Length: 603
Image (cartoon, rainbow, N blue to C red):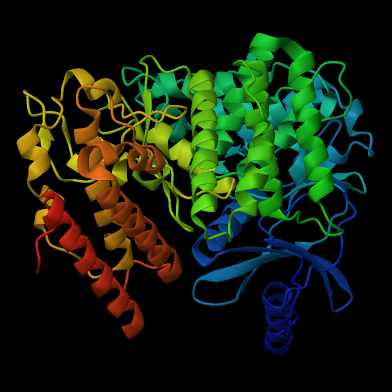
């Protein structure tokens, strides 16, 4: 392209205009292409010196690399002419540094893309498309981005943009199989049928094992560990083709566009989950169920898009996740009630409530959401081994303070430290719905209970808290046969965590009161399974310590919870708070001495 700025003075003006465009909150000029969506807000159309331009924000190093690739591709392609496309040109953007870390790639505004469908592109022949792709390879350019959304027709020419993923290869080299997959999906989407380019253009066969991309790395975590990276790549291609090849006789919804958009809207794990779920839905339930889900997602995108090309990503992300999991529940496993969306709205309503009753409702609702998302994930991903979903912490105990995380694990004897990829996916899904969560990575490191082979261990307080969603009774899951229940001696002495000493915080005091209650509930339960939720524990302890002391402990539990809610932090901040913590800690210590319970070491 010709230079946008004519000299140092004009270059400075261009730089200032672009900075204002991105940093000043301007949306720029609207794009003519109604299907263009820019989730990250990294692209702007604007006018400068009478010219209609587009600026794409990139890290400085990436911008330099992309421009260099575009320039070399332009040199290699020269005056390449292809039947159906005319002369093929490369748009080489101008690089405009904005700081030491970022730059803008600036190019002319080229109008509507080839993918818009209103420029005769749908009449292209398959042979013309194959001819274009093979010709690029013949010039030593493997451009996975040579797809309709990155192409424009102008005055008998076809202009190509976005060269960030291009590869410079020996002339005539066969394309990588992932590149071929991307071509197959995008060009099939344009013509509305599977063109099977993968059967018309031979792909290269790697001589050695492949390097996995981000999508494949996520997918590999969900597949059997015995699969090689070549196996993972093949599986990734199968899933993506099944997810994104065009619908047959189901209107104008673009599966390819939605799949591409999912990568931008969703966190990395959920983006891959979108592909796996839609592929499985299509495979098991057929085109109608698959089309219904895509239609729902397409409606979401339209409803979230304002006048500009950048939808409100947070709202779209949440709605997208709810739609995916609703589809999983309704089509892949028996659909429970109420709808997930209703539970999420209820959690939102409780966000600022600080009462004990609200904390109980928050914990119950968070546990149900967690259980249902986990069940959907396990049903869709179909792991070889069964994984136990176990809750712990305040969510398991049925009283979640504001800002508390959902603590859980997805584990088994094969994955004693948790199935981290599955947990990370669940954490992503919960975060999109407004619930922060921690998996096995945040488990206590203390080992009060240890198996005979020393391979499995639990912190005493964690063991007291473990339960499954839907049950209020203690349940250590797969560790039941490996860990012996705590002995009377173990319960009667300070745990490893307590031996580290008391912390002068409201959060720690809240832990102390619950630890005292759990020890008494365990004693009261005798040989039966102890209840985990605090309300159930408070109900059974009078039989162990009498009504008067049970009432005192109830008051202490409620008082420490109220202080935890009021502080909202793990760190003491005010003298008044410090005094209240000290008074409650002394009162709790006197209670423990009276009923014969251990407690944390005084530092």
